[in-house]
Image 1 (cartoon, rainbow, N blue to C red):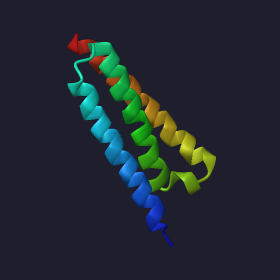
Image 2: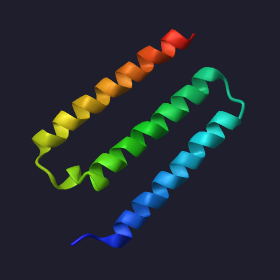
Image 3: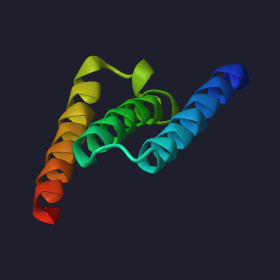
Image 4: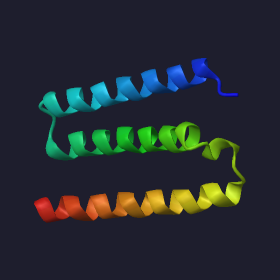
Length: 86
């Protein structure tokens, strides 16, 4: 049985972090400061989604490791794409 309170807390955290990402973008920070802030928030959001909504928190660690490798690859591609913008 799912824990509705836990999912609600995770949802609220995701909503707050998404709002923080918008505020970081609108704050007028330098490009790299905003970039690092948004990437950090995105990484935490991805971990929350994978851990709770995709139920990886309750899976064997080997499966979690495979997903984390994919997550790191996506982060590396995002960083590479950011250099092509400059």
